[in-house]
Structures are given as structure tokens and as C-alpha cells.
Image (cartoon, rainbow over all chains, first blue to last red; front, side, top):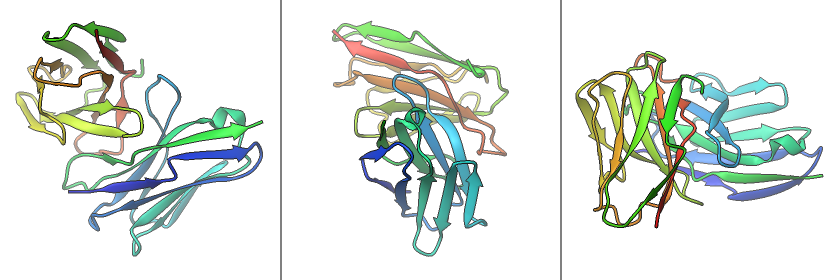
Length: 112
Length: 113
């Protein structure tokens, strides 16, 4: 089955700087890669996703890049703000496999 | 609650008791999922269902049971066989045709006392 590894597990960034979180996946047939943000005690919320036919996608301060050859994808947050502090999860989906496989999460702390 | 409701928000269980966590959605989604979340371990899949009266085990199904008698409902029972049930439980749903639309409930925090 699919295995998703996520690094780092914790990340502290000065407000205004950029943050990068990286994930690798094992199943070369995976074709959909969402990122979720989870604030303390709350549900994960989808913040951005990318499909395997695209190399990069941006939404304001958030971007995701995908390298299918290397089987890794990354989340980039620019101009970080205190409200970006949360746990971020990557995930991978092979539509034939029916279910998302999640990474172990990255706790991002923005230092004012 | 974004179309998917979990109850209760907090649940306390004595050792040896079974407890049932509720998950209801009004999104007309075919697929529903139960995940367990522990600190530092991300989201691990317990069970999932793609159609009424059918469900499949996920990665950590031991000590849990589910039913899917209605499209809208996917309750999870944590049995006494689950040795370490204290965790945060998340229910999710998605359409079958478009699995991009994963929606999560707000979670149930289960504590064994």
C-alpha cells in the first residue's frame, strides 16, 4: 500500500519568513495530493491540492510543487503570519486504492 | 458543521465498556471514513465504506466495529478489545466519483477513565 513520509515534524519560522514542508510517497500510481491544516482541537481543513498532471499550483501565499519522478511534493507558505501556526498534513491518493494516506504531520509555529 | 456532524465532542469510557461514536453527513457523499489521531502519528485509517451495507478494514481496525445501514450515517463502536482507545477520532466523507472532496467532521475526543 501507499506510504507517505512527511518532514520536518516541527518547524518554527519567524513571522514574515517562508516555511517549507516536504512529503514523499511510495506508490507511483498516486495521482492526487492534498494538504490539510489542522488547528488545535479542530478538524483538518483542505488548504490546497495538486493533481499529478500539474507540477505547481499557487493560491495567494500558499503553493504546492510536485515532482512525480522523485515522488515528492512540498508545501510552501510565504510571508508567514501568526494565524499560519497549526499542524499541516500532506496526503496521497491513488484513485484505484479508494482512500487517502496521510503523512504524520508538521507542527508549524510562527514566531512573532 | 460543514455538512458532517460528529457527536459527542467529548466522551469518557470506563475500561471494559463499549462506546459508539456517531457520524452523520448531509452531503450526499457515498464514501465515509473513520480515522484515529494520536500525537505525532498523523491520521490512521480505521474503517471505510463506499456503499450502504458494505465496509472495509483500514490499517488499524482491531478493536473497532462499524455499520453502514444508511448512506448518511457511519457509526464507530470502540469495543473493550481495543486496548488503548484514548485518542481523537475523526470521521470524513467524500463522493465516489470525485474523491477530491474529502470533508472532515469536528472530531470526538475519547478518554478512558
